[in-house]
Length: 173
Image 1 (cartoon, rainbow, N blue to C red):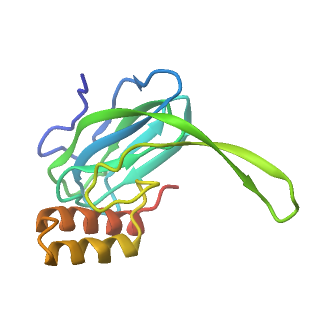
Image 2: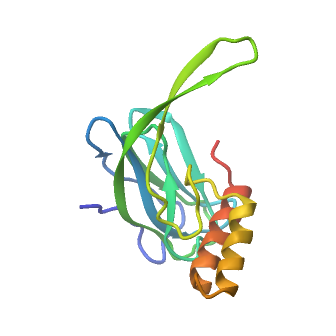
């Protein structure tokens, strides 16, 4: 059971952490969360539980639940940190799904190759194509076209656009 959320509305100078959520060996975590925080000042972090210097940081308003990918991360933990001024609704983690990992091999221009492990999961956000988690502009255009053909709901298009704009404004460090 996932039990991470801030008070709604959260307080100033709040610094709270979760426990560690671990997927089985050979799986990576993907997080479904919603957040409404003071943009640029209050942050929701998704950490790699094995390496606290590896994280993604989110701020602003997700306008509902969004999928936050953490490729290659078997275990995650969360943190919320607010400053001393404005407060908003806060953060709620809905669930964590575990997906099997796959290995891919890439080659560099010097003909050497390296193997990296990334997560492979079905895209749960309508219109989001693999590799999932990073929404591309073309996916937004396709989603709008699907909405005009009544094959996608407007709320799903808006969720996808919000995920794209948040990732553009607040890319992972």
